[in-house]
Every structure is written in structure tokens, then in C-alpha cells.
Image 1 (cartoon, rainbow, N blue to C red):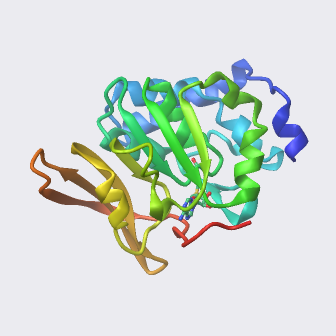
Image 2 (tube, helix red, strand yellow):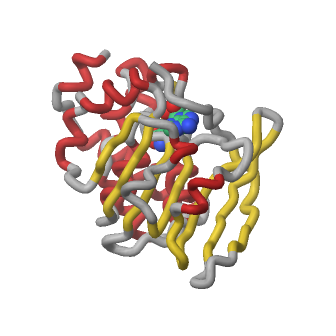
Amino acid sequence: MSMLHSKPKEDTYLHKGMRNQLVQLLRDKKIKDERVLTAIGNIPRHFFLDPAFERHAYEDKAFPILADQTISQPYTVALQTELLELKKFDKVLEIGTGSAYQACVLAEMGISLYTIERQKELYDYVGKFFFLKKYFNIKRFYGDGYEGLPTYGPFDKIIVTAAAPYVPPKLIEQLKPGGIFVVPVGDENGQKMLRITKDKDGTLHTQELGAASFVPMLQGKNM
Ligand code: SAH
């Protein structure tokens, strides 16, 4: 699998056609930010999947990747991205690099991305991924997302792509005043998408945005 990941793959008219249909589906599901839709339309999601799942790459579904993790559902990727209200040159922190699909969607939007993965196997695998070489604005880190990246922060926007049992306090600290933090909170019995904003004076506001379904955000690093 890792050998396959290092070689460029083809992006055919068939793939592009399926991708346009996926973008239309996301539009029907009320994703409105055209920049998000353009980013999804630009990224060959089949590059990110195991060959066994490639023909399903443009279905609006999550799929398994390495180390028992998942590539998020396109709708979820689009929704979380839209909720961040990205501006060009924003400094963005992502927890849970996983396949790096969400990372590429963010990077397409002209921001500067810092992304952390706790699974060494996945971190190394993504390091060999040919497609990532085109994104100079993605910096990857192997580490524990609960710690954030204190030496690189604070961040304009923070996105967590795993379900946190509680809102990680260090990530709140690393959010700039005026910043936006999107994080699913809960466990296997139920999760909610939260959007937390920090006022200029540091006051926090939390909006609940409906049910979510993510793999858990785990403590510590995993070799
Ligand atoms: N954004 C990813 C989604 C991957 S699933 C994508 O587009 O493919 C969530 C990821 O979060 C998994 O890879 C998991 O290993 C990672 N993760 C879970 N807990 C973490 C933590 N504490 N720090 C960093 N990454 C974490």
C-alpha cells in the first residue's frame, strides 16, 4: 500500500465527472461556500483511498484508511471547512491529519496549515504521498493534538477531525482573539459539532450544530 501511495495516479474524465456530481450533491445538502466546493472539485479523492475503495471515492461516505482510522465523509469535510469562514493567509491548525484529505481541502483555500497526527504509521504513510508535494502551505507534525502546537500558535482557526471527549483547553489557549474553533465533542454514544468563537476580549461563545460521527480523539502519541 505505501508503495502505491508514492506513485502518481491518474485523474481521468470519469473521475472528474463523478467529482462534479459529488459537488452538486454537497450543494443540494446546503453547502454554500463556493470556495469549499471548488476545493472539493479540484481534489482527486480517489488518490487518498486504498485501491479496494477507489471506485467508491466519490460517494458521500467515510472510508477506512490505515491504523483503523477513517477518511471523513465529504459532506463533513465541506461543513467543517465552511464553518471556519476561512480568509486567505489564515493560520489554521488541524488535529487529526489522517489521510490528509481534509488538509488538502483547507490548503486549496490559500491558508497556511499546521496539521497534527498521533499515529506514527499514518504520519509516515502520508509523508510518502506524492500528491502532497504540491502543497507548500501544509506543515505536518507527529504529536498529540491535545497539546496543540504552542510554539507555532496562536491560530486564526482550529479544526479537530476526531471526536473529543471535552473541548481541549490548550487548543482554546492557542486560538487567537477573533478566531473560530470547530470541534466535534462526545463519545461513541453521541457527538455534537461545536463552533466556538473567541471575542477580541477573550470571551468564548459556543454554538451547537447538530449530530456528528467521528473516530475518537485519543490521548498521547502512538508508535
Ligand atoms: N482529517 C482526516 C480524518 C481522519 S480520522 C482525513 O481527512 O482523512 C481522525 C484522525 O485523528 C485519525 O487519523 C486519528 O489517528 C487522529 N487523532 C486522534 N486523536 C488524535 C490526537 N490526540 N492528536 C492527533 N491526531 C489524533
